[in-house]
Length: 205
Image (cartoon, rainbow, N blue to C red; front, top):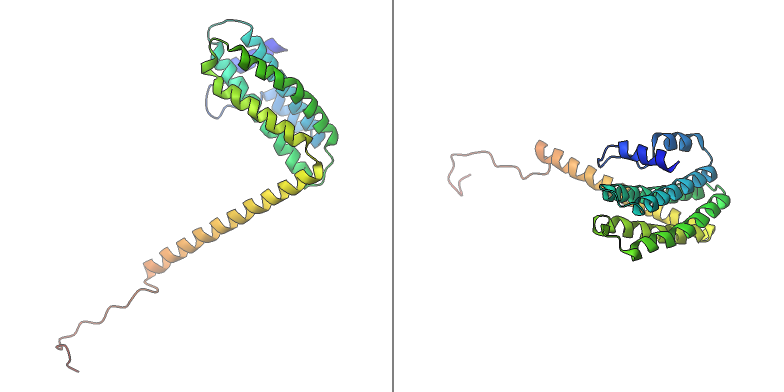
């Protein structure tokens, strides 16, 4: 499984728009319509990424640094997806307790592994240090959120969504107002009217 995943990632184009899941994983996510199933899948994919990083760290091979860096970035994006699925499910009043249990169990295993990699100071650490630190912090944040009371987290998500909607509405209104002002200026609406030219001297009627 590890070797297959390594081949898939090596074949992936190194570009900013690189998918953080393989084609097979994307199909699995599409088939898993229930949020609990998706959370369990994402937890499994996250564990596989960290297993791959451990495997790469254990082998001093040329070119491993970019693989480690990209795999850590993909791992962090998977955790972001976990949080997105959870938040969306909570807003829709779906019970995701079983899914979160799988996520918490997995992240509790992963966190010390990532910390151990950082503490071991691999010789090429500088090439993926930022991605590793991001992975650790993302794991800590996701773990904390996954262990949070569902009711409180739902309130937080709803408040954040309401704030974002308001900001979007205000921005849209502001842009509409600017566009209208530009149209009015172009049409001369509200602009001071110039006096018609005259041959009379000042003071003459």
